[in-house]
Image 1 (cartoon, rainbow, N blue to C red):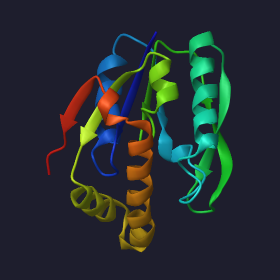
Image 2 (cartoon, rainbow, N blue to C red):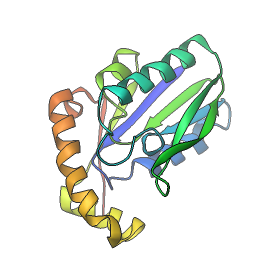
Image 3 (cartoon, one colour):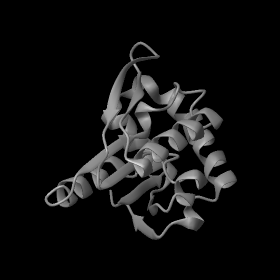
Image 4 (cartoon, rainbow, N blue to C red):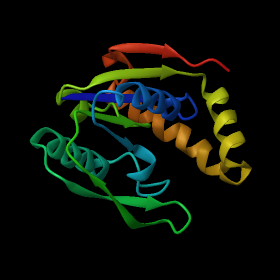
Length: 165
């Protein structure tokens, strides 16, 4: 079993890397992917102890090879209103801001960190998701930097990658 975490600032290309790894690894292994966007409790309650607890539960299920239902956040209704079944797999990829936090690293994850300048990342997210979220994204940039400083995520990465515009 392999645990892979992909972390870095918003807009760095984490989802793209996760998709590429999934396509490559799933040719001869069973692979599950967890997107951190599905786990956050909205904009303002995202990078907190509740998220860490969810990650602990997911990792425990992966390691013990049991199925679990993971509540999925709906960004339109701003609520958890669906779920994803996580089944035992050979590889679990967790991607998104906060994916490489200590609890995940302590479980033996290989951590990939994607570097991108903050303003370039913001521009990518707004181009993808629309200008309506700009005020939320500007606060998110502050929140993610505080998280990364507390957790020293980049410092613990096994692989440092630079995202190209």
